[in-house]
Image (cartoon, rainbow over all chains, first blue to last red; front, side, top):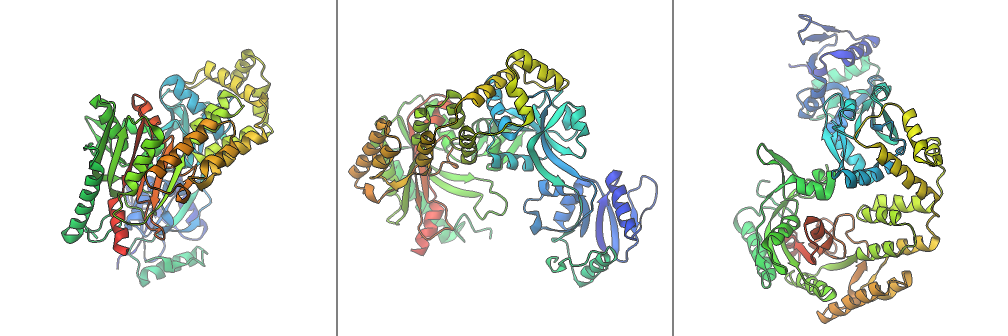
Length: 239
Length: 374
């Protein structure tokens, strides 16, 4: 019988914190093989570890190729519309905190709120002949947030990394990105809009509702959740 | 499943398909009596649509990419390409009929179809406004093959007229006009212009700056200058903010006039009298409403049985800046409006040259679905 597949970030701080989180609850996760080999083992019967790039985990959960996965709520909300139909949130892990926020240059002393941003977008378009550019990789979340707010005359420009630098590089006027302490924003001479919080996120353990579930697998998950002191999860939603 | 289409099961082959084709042909013949056929492309350059509708169009239309032609969108409706083709034709007055599929991305979880047929009619250059509007409304009302639908007529031009008649600053009027089609933000603006808001500390500093030098100092204290938006733009906006803060709030009368206009719902026959009560100074708007009611009566319709709702379609018909209409199927909330349309002179202005433009579409699949139950 194939085991229950648990997807974990393949490297970095999120992986380290996830390993610590399980260790704190008496479950050991070890990297195996060569130092750079993406392989590992979890000390739970019937659970198989799959190391994946952090951004792949929501997609793999959605496709049902892994049963469980640790990833950020920001990625789940961005990439899986109506995610509660596809995923079950098992537990928030209490790390990987990140807020998706809208930020503008700190020197925009006339801009504190979304109201201001909307007014500035109108004036900017008149003056420059194109829409005010907001750099982000969270296109769906940002577009929806600004649509509900009724903001006009802006455009999203794609930025897959170093988004805070786009304003200085003159490829965007404002940004929407995740921040933990806000320090990177400050270092890049940006400030968060007062009402510019789009989403609060943290690392979370999800179960895929589209993966193959049978009684044996549900039992393995149930045992795992017991070990982790996470009872009272409604596993009938799986499969 | 593969034989299903918008609102209809098993209608992509056999008798189901025959019925769809026959219904489309019937509608094309109906509208084609006074119109030339036209067939815009299904793939449209994305930049024109994005320029018109902003970033939001990306969540309503399917975008695709071609290495040579760049970003293209599957047409979310026919109006824009028909306007462009009309302008290129050099004709001043012309009527067009078209039929074909449109593609719309729907919000996740929505049951609405992402591909459906439209049969449409667009008319350019008609100058006798109330008569032209009544004639096109009647043309649509007669297109449903005897099926009873519930019509509603709206008119955003009342909102624009009331904004112009307000006694407040031109800056406020421009801000309101910009958001007529976005009701949430429009309400937010009205609330800001009519309530006294206590400024935050940082806003207070900005408002207290009395000359550009003060503003420059605030900007210097805020850190390194980054971004394309210039010092001049910030200084100019500070002046705007200061003027706004020092401008008296909207009067209760002004606020009542605009709120009551937005909320006006009555019969077409009653609309002139009701609007005269809300905005007595706008007698030309009342006369226009009365002339349209008369013109509808001339078409054999009963203005006292037709519903008027100023804000009808306002959030879904951007650039429709006057008379708009919709025909709904009573007791069928699962079906969209069977037909919608209206005046969009504002759209022609942005696409090149302001021209009187009225038109609309029928959803033949929805109409057939309705007939199936009759």
